Length: 393
Image (tube, rainbow, N blue to C red; front, side):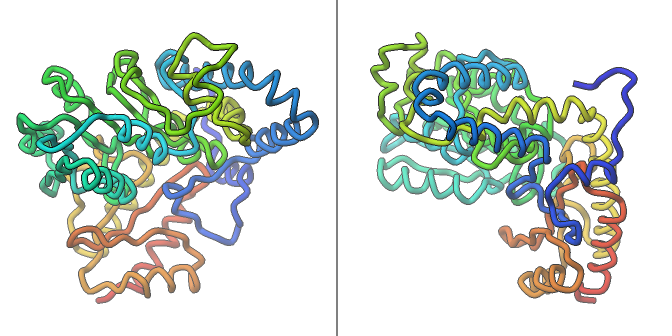
Protein backbone atom coordinates (compact mmCIF):
# COMPACT_ATOMS: atom_id res chain seq x y z
CA UNK A 1 0.00 0.00 0.00
CA UNK A 2 1.13 3.53 -0.65
CA UNK A 3 2.27 5.51 2.35
CA UNK A 4 0.74 9.02 2.32
CA UNK A 5 3.33 11.71 1.83
CA UNK A 6 6.13 9.24 1.18
CA UNK A 7 8.21 9.99 -1.90
CA UNK A 8 9.32 7.34 -4.33
CA UNK A 9 12.78 5.88 -3.84
CA UNK A 10 14.48 6.54 -7.18
CA UNK A 11 15.36 3.56 -9.36
CA UNK A 12 19.05 4.48 -9.32
CA UNK A 13 18.95 4.04 -5.54
CA UNK A 14 16.85 0.89 -5.69
CA UNK A 15 19.38 -0.75 -8.00
CA UNK A 16 21.87 -1.11 -5.18
CA UNK A 17 19.31 -3.15 -3.23
CA UNK A 18 19.48 -5.98 -5.79
CA UNK A 19 22.08 -8.66 -6.41
CA UNK A 20 22.06 -8.23 -10.20
CA UNK A 21 25.41 -7.82 -11.96
CA UNK A 22 25.92 -4.07 -12.34
CA UNK A 23 27.33 -4.37 -15.89
CA UNK A 24 24.22 -6.14 -17.21
CA UNK A 25 21.22 -4.12 -18.38
CA UNK A 26 18.59 -6.50 -17.05
CA UNK A 27 15.29 -6.14 -18.93
CA UNK A 28 13.99 -9.66 -18.32
CA UNK A 29 12.45 -9.52 -14.87
CA UNK A 30 9.38 -11.30 -16.28
CA UNK A 31 11.16 -14.64 -16.74
CA UNK A 32 12.50 -15.43 -13.27
CA UNK A 33 12.30 -12.20 -11.30
CA UNK A 34 15.08 -10.73 -9.16
CA UNK A 35 15.07 -10.74 -5.36
CA UNK A 36 16.10 -7.66 -3.32
CA UNK A 37 18.96 -8.07 -0.87
CA UNK A 38 16.82 -7.75 2.31
CA UNK A 39 14.37 -10.38 1.05
CA UNK A 40 17.17 -12.71 0.01
CA UNK A 41 18.76 -12.23 3.43
CA UNK A 42 15.48 -13.20 5.12
CA UNK A 43 15.33 -16.27 2.88
CA UNK A 44 18.85 -17.34 3.88
CA UNK A 45 18.11 -16.67 7.54
CA UNK A 46 15.16 -19.07 7.39
CA UNK A 47 17.36 -21.70 5.74
CA UNK A 48 19.90 -21.33 8.56
CA UNK A 49 17.14 -21.48 11.15
CA UNK A 50 15.99 -24.81 9.70
CA UNK A 51 19.50 -26.25 9.83
CA UNK A 52 20.10 -25.20 13.44
CA UNK A 53 17.40 -27.56 14.69
CA UNK A 54 15.66 -29.42 11.86
CA UNK A 55 13.45 -31.52 14.13
CA UNK A 56 12.16 -28.54 16.06
CA UNK A 57 11.70 -26.49 12.89
CA UNK A 58 9.88 -29.10 10.81
CA UNK A 59 8.32 -31.07 13.64
CA UNK A 60 7.13 -28.37 16.01
CA UNK A 61 7.31 -24.95 14.33
CA UNK A 62 6.42 -25.69 10.70
CA UNK A 63 2.65 -25.42 10.92
CA UNK A 64 2.66 -22.17 12.90
CA UNK A 65 5.26 -20.57 10.63
CA UNK A 66 3.39 -21.57 7.49
CA UNK A 67 0.10 -20.37 8.96
CA UNK A 68 1.58 -16.91 9.60
CA UNK A 69 3.13 -16.77 6.12
CA UNK A 70 -0.21 -17.74 4.54
CA UNK A 71 -2.01 -15.07 6.54
CA UNK A 72 0.39 -12.37 5.31
CA UNK A 73 0.03 -13.49 1.70
CA UNK A 74 -3.76 -13.81 1.95
CA UNK A 75 -4.03 -10.24 3.21
CA UNK A 76 -1.95 -9.06 0.28
CA UNK A 77 -4.10 -10.99 -2.20
CA UNK A 78 -7.46 -9.98 -0.76
CA UNK A 79 -8.73 -13.33 0.45
CA UNK A 80 -8.84 -15.59 3.51
CA UNK A 81 -5.81 -17.64 4.54
CA UNK A 82 -7.91 -20.82 4.20
CA UNK A 83 -8.24 -20.17 0.44
CA UNK A 84 -4.56 -20.35 -0.48
CA UNK A 85 -1.67 -22.78 -0.23
CA UNK A 86 1.97 -22.17 -1.06
CA UNK A 87 3.44 -23.97 -4.07
CA UNK A 88 6.80 -23.80 -5.81
CA UNK A 89 5.40 -22.07 -8.91
CA UNK A 90 2.31 -21.42 -11.00
CA UNK A 91 2.89 -24.47 -13.23
CA UNK A 92 2.51 -26.72 -10.19
CA UNK A 93 -0.52 -24.71 -9.06
CA UNK A 94 -2.34 -25.12 -12.37
CA UNK A 95 -1.46 -28.81 -12.52
CA UNK A 96 -3.03 -29.22 -9.09
CA UNK A 97 -6.26 -27.77 -10.43
CA UNK A 98 -6.29 -29.26 -13.94
CA UNK A 99 -5.45 -32.81 -12.85
CA UNK A 100 -8.27 -32.76 -10.32
CA UNK A 101 -11.07 -31.96 -12.77
CA UNK A 102 -13.25 -34.75 -14.11
CA UNK A 103 -13.24 -34.18 -17.85
CA UNK A 104 -13.78 -36.59 -20.70
CA UNK A 105 -14.93 -37.06 -24.30
CA UNK A 106 -17.35 -34.35 -25.37
CA UNK A 107 -16.00 -31.80 -22.87
CA UNK A 108 -14.01 -28.72 -23.90
CA UNK A 109 -11.38 -26.59 -22.18
CA UNK A 110 -11.23 -23.13 -23.73
CA UNK A 111 -8.11 -20.94 -23.72
CA UNK A 112 -6.43 -18.46 -26.09
CA UNK A 113 -3.47 -18.37 -28.45
CA UNK A 114 -1.65 -16.14 -25.93
CA UNK A 115 -1.05 -18.81 -23.28
CA UNK A 116 2.22 -19.93 -21.75
CA UNK A 117 3.85 -22.96 -23.35
CA UNK A 118 3.93 -25.09 -20.19
CA UNK A 119 0.20 -24.56 -19.65
CA UNK A 120 -0.56 -25.43 -23.29
CA UNK A 121 1.46 -28.60 -22.86
CA UNK A 122 -0.35 -29.49 -19.64
CA UNK A 123 -3.79 -29.23 -21.25
CA UNK A 124 -2.71 -31.07 -24.40
CA UNK A 125 -1.30 -33.91 -22.30
CA UNK A 126 -4.45 -34.21 -20.20
CA UNK A 127 -6.68 -33.95 -23.28
CA UNK A 128 -4.81 -36.83 -24.87
CA UNK A 129 -5.09 -38.86 -21.69
CA UNK A 130 -8.75 -38.12 -20.86
CA UNK A 131 -10.30 -37.49 -24.26
CA UNK A 132 -11.57 -33.91 -23.87
CA UNK A 133 -10.83 -31.14 -26.41
CA UNK A 134 -8.43 -28.28 -25.72
CA UNK A 135 -9.43 -25.19 -27.74
CA UNK A 136 -7.20 -22.12 -28.24
CA UNK A 137 -9.50 -19.26 -29.21
CA UNK A 138 -8.01 -16.47 -31.30
CA UNK A 139 -8.24 -12.94 -29.93
CA UNK A 140 -7.74 -10.63 -32.89
CA UNK A 141 -4.90 -8.14 -32.97
CA UNK A 142 -4.45 -5.29 -32.52
CA UNK A 143 -6.53 -5.28 -29.37
CA UNK A 144 -8.91 -2.34 -29.30
CA UNK A 145 -11.08 -2.52 -26.18
CA UNK A 146 -11.55 -4.93 -23.30
CA UNK A 147 -15.14 -5.53 -24.38
CA UNK A 148 -14.12 -6.49 -27.91
CA UNK A 149 -11.38 -8.79 -26.61
CA UNK A 150 -13.87 -10.48 -24.27
CA UNK A 151 -16.35 -10.86 -27.14
CA UNK A 152 -13.66 -12.42 -29.32
CA UNK A 153 -12.87 -14.92 -26.60
CA UNK A 154 -16.49 -15.73 -25.80
CA UNK A 155 -17.10 -16.75 -29.43
CA UNK A 156 -15.22 -19.90 -28.55
CA UNK A 157 -17.63 -20.90 -25.77
CA UNK A 158 -20.03 -23.73 -26.64
CA UNK A 159 -22.46 -25.85 -24.67
CA UNK A 160 -19.56 -28.30 -24.23
CA UNK A 161 -17.24 -25.78 -22.55
CA UNK A 162 -16.55 -27.00 -19.01
CA UNK A 163 -13.40 -25.03 -18.14
CA UNK A 164 -11.96 -21.66 -19.14
CA UNK A 165 -8.21 -21.21 -18.63
CA UNK A 166 -6.77 -17.72 -19.14
CA UNK A 167 -3.62 -15.81 -18.35
CA UNK A 168 -4.25 -12.70 -16.28
CA UNK A 169 -1.18 -11.22 -17.97
CA UNK A 170 0.00 -13.14 -21.02
CA UNK A 171 3.57 -14.39 -21.20
CA UNK A 172 4.49 -13.99 -24.90
CA UNK A 173 2.52 -10.79 -25.56
CA UNK A 174 2.60 -9.23 -22.04
CA UNK A 175 -1.02 -8.06 -22.21
CA UNK A 176 -3.58 -7.82 -19.43
CA UNK A 177 -6.60 -9.82 -20.56
CA UNK A 178 -10.19 -8.91 -19.51
CA UNK A 179 -10.21 -11.67 -16.91
CA UNK A 180 -12.72 -9.94 -14.62
CA UNK A 181 -15.41 -9.78 -17.29
CA UNK A 182 -14.82 -13.34 -18.50
CA UNK A 183 -14.77 -14.84 -14.99
CA UNK A 184 -18.05 -13.11 -14.10
CA UNK A 185 -19.75 -14.36 -17.25
CA UNK A 186 -18.38 -17.88 -16.76
CA UNK A 187 -19.76 -17.92 -13.20
CA UNK A 188 -23.23 -17.13 -14.58
CA UNK A 189 -22.91 -19.97 -17.10
CA UNK A 190 -21.60 -22.51 -14.59
CA UNK A 191 -18.20 -22.79 -16.30
CA UNK A 192 -15.14 -23.37 -14.10
CA UNK A 193 -12.34 -20.80 -14.38
CA UNK A 194 -8.63 -21.52 -13.98
CA UNK A 195 -6.51 -18.35 -14.10
CA UNK A 196 -2.77 -18.30 -14.79
CA UNK A 197 -1.54 -15.43 -12.65
CA UNK A 198 2.18 -15.94 -13.23
CA UNK A 199 2.73 -12.21 -13.83
CA UNK A 200 -0.06 -10.82 -11.65
CA UNK A 201 1.03 -10.59 -7.99
CA UNK A 202 3.22 -7.53 -7.49
CA UNK A 203 2.61 -6.07 -10.94
CA UNK A 204 -1.12 -5.31 -10.77
CA UNK A 205 -3.51 -4.92 -7.81
CA UNK A 206 -5.22 -8.18 -6.87
CA UNK A 207 -8.32 -8.93 -4.83
CA UNK A 208 -9.06 -12.60 -5.37
CA UNK A 209 -12.33 -12.59 -3.47
CA UNK A 210 -13.59 -9.83 -5.73
CA UNK A 211 -12.23 -11.45 -8.90
CA UNK A 212 -13.83 -14.73 -7.77
CA UNK A 213 -12.27 -17.35 -10.06
CA UNK A 214 -12.52 -21.00 -9.14
CA UNK A 215 -8.74 -21.39 -9.20
CA UNK A 216 -5.94 -18.85 -9.49
CA UNK A 217 -2.28 -19.84 -9.60
CA UNK A 218 0.35 -17.19 -9.08
CA UNK A 219 4.11 -16.77 -8.95
CA UNK A 220 5.63 -14.75 -6.12
CA UNK A 221 9.24 -14.85 -7.31
CA UNK A 222 8.47 -12.65 -10.30
CA UNK A 223 6.87 -9.26 -9.63
CA UNK A 224 6.49 -9.61 -5.86
CA UNK A 225 10.25 -10.39 -5.91
CA UNK A 226 10.12 -13.20 -3.35
CA UNK A 227 12.78 -15.95 -3.56
CA UNK A 228 12.71 -18.49 -6.38
CA UNK A 229 10.42 -21.41 -5.67
CA UNK A 230 7.55 -19.43 -4.17
CA UNK A 231 4.08 -19.48 -5.68
CA UNK A 232 0.53 -20.19 -4.58
CA UNK A 233 -2.77 -21.73 -5.52
CA UNK A 234 -6.01 -19.98 -4.63
CA UNK A 235 -9.15 -22.11 -4.60
CA UNK A 236 -12.62 -20.68 -4.17
CA UNK A 237 -14.22 -22.29 -1.08
CA UNK A 238 -16.90 -24.00 -3.19
CA UNK A 239 -14.21 -25.38 -5.55
CA UNK A 240 -11.84 -26.75 -2.91
CA UNK A 241 -13.68 -30.06 -2.69
CA UNK A 242 -12.86 -30.67 -6.37
CA UNK A 243 -9.14 -30.79 -5.68
CA UNK A 244 -7.10 -33.94 -5.29
CA UNK A 245 -3.62 -33.60 -3.79
CA UNK A 246 -0.82 -34.05 -6.33
CA UNK A 247 1.22 -35.65 -3.55
CA UNK A 248 -0.43 -37.75 -0.85
CA UNK A 249 1.54 -37.47 2.38
CA UNK A 250 0.97 -37.09 6.11
CA UNK A 251 -1.30 -34.13 5.57
CA UNK A 252 -4.03 -36.37 4.21
CA UNK A 253 -4.69 -37.86 7.66
CA UNK A 254 -3.00 -35.29 9.82
CA UNK A 255 -3.41 -35.94 13.56
CA UNK A 256 -3.13 -32.18 14.24
CA UNK A 257 -5.47 -31.10 11.47
CA UNK A 258 -5.97 -27.42 10.73
CA UNK A 259 -9.64 -28.12 10.08
CA UNK A 260 -9.22 -27.20 6.39
CA UNK A 261 -8.67 -30.19 4.07
CA UNK A 262 -7.38 -27.89 1.31
CA UNK A 263 -4.53 -26.78 3.59
CA UNK A 264 -3.86 -30.19 5.13
CA UNK A 265 -3.74 -31.99 1.77
CA UNK A 266 -1.32 -29.55 0.16
CA UNK A 267 0.85 -27.88 2.79
CA UNK A 268 2.75 -30.85 4.22
CA UNK A 269 4.36 -32.80 1.35
CA UNK A 270 7.22 -34.34 3.30
CA UNK A 271 10.65 -32.85 3.91
CA UNK A 272 11.23 -29.72 1.84
CA UNK A 273 12.82 -26.30 2.18
CA UNK A 274 10.02 -23.85 3.02
CA UNK A 275 12.34 -20.86 3.43
CA UNK A 276 11.14 -19.24 0.18
CA UNK A 277 7.55 -19.29 1.48
CA UNK A 278 8.53 -17.89 4.87
CA UNK A 279 10.37 -14.99 3.18
CA UNK A 280 7.25 -13.88 1.27
CA UNK A 281 6.07 -11.57 4.11
CA UNK A 282 9.46 -9.83 3.88
CA UNK A 283 8.91 -9.31 0.13
CA UNK A 284 5.53 -7.73 0.88
CA UNK A 285 7.16 -5.48 3.49
CA UNK A 286 9.92 -4.49 1.09
CA UNK A 287 7.45 -3.18 -1.44
CA UNK A 288 5.44 -1.37 1.22
CA UNK A 289 8.60 0.23 2.64
CA UNK A 290 9.58 1.51 -0.80
CA UNK A 291 6.20 2.88 -1.86
CA UNK A 292 5.84 0.31 -4.61
CA UNK A 293 2.60 1.73 -5.96
CA UNK A 294 4.59 4.76 -7.03
CA UNK A 295 7.46 2.60 -8.30
CA UNK A 296 5.03 0.64 -10.45
CA UNK A 297 3.53 3.83 -11.87
CA UNK A 298 6.99 5.13 -12.78
CA UNK A 299 7.90 1.79 -14.34
CA UNK A 300 4.72 1.78 -16.42
CA UNK A 301 5.40 5.28 -17.73
CA UNK A 302 8.93 4.31 -18.68
CA UNK A 303 7.66 1.10 -20.31
CA UNK A 304 5.01 2.96 -22.31
CA UNK A 305 7.55 5.51 -23.55
CA UNK A 306 10.01 2.78 -24.51
CA UNK A 307 7.39 0.75 -26.35
CA UNK A 308 6.36 3.82 -28.36
CA UNK A 309 10.00 4.53 -29.26
CA UNK A 310 10.62 0.93 -30.38
CA UNK A 311 7.52 1.09 -32.58
CA UNK A 312 8.70 4.38 -34.07
CA UNK A 313 12.09 2.81 -34.72
CA UNK A 314 10.67 -0.25 -36.48
CA UNK A 315 7.70 1.50 -38.10
CA UNK A 316 5.46 -1.28 -36.76
CA UNK A 317 2.30 -0.61 -34.72
CA UNK A 318 1.89 -2.08 -31.23
CA UNK A 319 -0.29 -5.12 -30.53
CA UNK A 320 -2.95 -2.98 -28.85
CA UNK A 321 -4.61 0.39 -29.12
CA UNK A 322 -2.96 2.22 -26.21
CA UNK A 323 -0.62 1.74 -23.28
CA UNK A 324 -3.12 2.35 -20.47
CA UNK A 325 -4.96 -0.79 -19.45
CA UNK A 326 -3.27 -3.30 -21.76
CA UNK A 327 0.04 -3.69 -19.94
CA UNK A 328 1.69 -2.67 -16.70
CA UNK A 329 5.47 -3.07 -16.23
CA UNK A 330 6.08 -5.50 -19.06
CA UNK A 331 5.36 -4.96 -22.75
CA UNK A 332 5.91 -6.66 -26.09
CA UNK A 333 6.70 -4.85 -29.33
CA UNK A 334 6.81 -6.33 -32.85
CA UNK A 335 10.11 -6.64 -34.68
CA UNK A 336 10.58 -6.76 -38.47
CA UNK A 337 9.79 -10.14 -39.98
CA UNK A 338 13.30 -10.53 -41.42
CA UNK A 339 14.90 -10.22 -37.95
CA UNK A 340 17.13 -13.17 -37.00
CA UNK A 341 16.12 -13.47 -33.35
CA UNK A 342 18.94 -15.80 -32.30
CA UNK A 343 21.57 -13.56 -33.83
CA UNK A 344 20.00 -10.40 -32.42
CA UNK A 345 19.80 -11.88 -28.91
CA UNK A 346 23.42 -12.96 -29.07
CA UNK A 347 24.62 -9.54 -30.19
CA UNK A 348 22.49 -7.66 -27.66
CA UNK A 349 24.12 -9.63 -24.86
CA UNK A 350 27.69 -9.86 -26.14
CA UNK A 351 28.06 -6.34 -27.52
CA UNK A 352 25.73 -4.36 -25.24
CA UNK A 353 25.31 -6.59 -22.15
CA UNK A 354 21.52 -6.40 -22.50
CA UNK A 355 19.43 -9.30 -21.19
CA UNK A 356 16.03 -9.20 -22.89
CA UNK A 357 13.82 -11.98 -24.34
CA UNK A 358 13.09 -12.19 -28.06
CA UNK A 359 10.06 -14.33 -28.86
CA UNK A 360 8.72 -16.00 -31.97
CA UNK A 361 4.97 -16.20 -31.39
CA UNK A 362 2.55 -17.38 -34.07
CA UNK A 363 3.52 -15.27 -37.09
CA UNK A 364 5.06 -12.48 -35.00
CA UNK A 365 8.59 -11.72 -33.89
CA UNK A 366 8.52 -9.85 -30.59
CA UNK A 367 10.78 -8.22 -28.06
CA UNK A 368 9.41 -8.41 -24.51
CA UNK A 369 10.76 -5.76 -22.16
CA UNK A 370 10.30 -5.78 -18.38
CA UNK A 371 10.72 -2.54 -16.44
CA UNK A 372 11.29 -3.07 -12.72
CA UNK A 373 12.20 -0.68 -9.92
CA UNK A 374 15.93 -1.13 -10.52
CA UNK A 375 15.66 -0.03 -14.17
CA UNK A 376 16.38 3.52 -15.29
CA UNK A 377 15.84 5.67 -18.41
CA UNK A 378 19.51 5.02 -19.20
CA UNK A 379 18.73 1.30 -19.48
CA UNK A 380 16.01 2.04 -22.01
CA UNK A 381 18.26 4.38 -23.97
CA UNK A 382 20.89 1.66 -24.13
CA UNK A 383 18.33 -0.78 -25.54
CA UNK A 384 17.09 1.69 -28.14
CA UNK A 385 20.63 2.55 -29.23
CA UNK A 386 21.41 -1.15 -29.64
CA UNK A 387 18.22 -1.89 -31.58
CA UNK A 388 18.81 1.06 -33.90
CA UNK A 389 22.20 -0.37 -34.82
CA UNK A 390 21.34 -4.07 -34.89
CA UNK A 391 17.85 -4.33 -36.41
CA UNK A 392 17.65 -4.97 -40.15
CA UNK A 393 17.08 -1.85 -42.21
